[in-house]
Image (cartoon, rainbow, N blue to C red; front, side):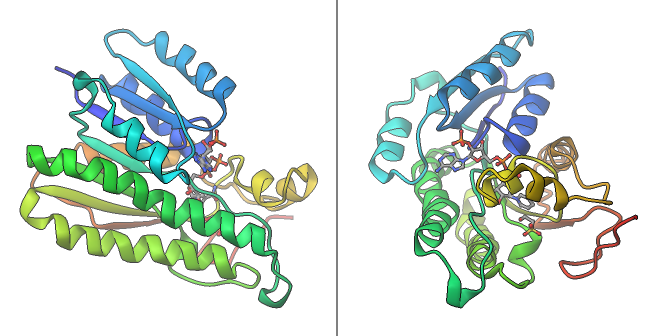
Length: 253
Ligand code: NDP
Ligand code: 8X3
């Protein structure tokens, strides 16, 4: 029987690439996201892969009761989730703390921290009951270091980083692996969202850098997940070769 992976935020970027990578390797896949038309697009791509099943769940990770109900009402055949990838997340705005937009802050905290917690709280008991599972939390280089105007986004990703360590402790006796993934610059829809649809600003963010791709991240997640079950990769920092840390990025002219 195929293993099951659930990926939050699978309508774009890392989540979509992770869903495709695992599906191509024989996993049944639960994809989630808010945009229905995007879920349909990814579903069509998954339809084309032979020997696997997929389930598309349309919900917002910020909606606590919706998350609870949807997971509770999963058809029995989908309840045996082997891998959860807490990927749904975003940065919104980039301002000095004294100028910050509080609505932007709320969106980041509600999605990146509370949303991740709601999903984990709903799925982790299913893993505990089976004494098996693997949880991936997509944090960021911003969860390791701070940078100017990154304030609240960085704080949410530091929270994810900390939660990964805590979860690993709590899950120890349940045979559940917890892996924290901390990517640096990666070109997805991330900057378009952060800069609220400003395509030029989003493009300039990656100027002169061969940044990470969503497929690079999917490759790393797949590697961690397919190591022998007694091996847990705790934490991975991944940057483009042109990036040493948040402050040192070498941009080619
Ligand atoms: P994208 O914007 O390309 O994808 C983000 C995904 O998250 C989308 O599928 C989106 O789906 C989903 N999402 C956002 N908000 C919600 C919500 N409230 N409920 C459900 N789903 C939601 O960005 P990335 O793929 O780059 O980002 C994925 C993760 O990786 C994020 O957590 C991000 O912080 C992190 N990250 C990104 C880096 C980068 O440079 N790109 C580097 C390090 C970490 P929809 O809009 O359909 O709901
Ligand atoms: C996204 C990477 O450097 O823009 O988490 O914060 S960065």
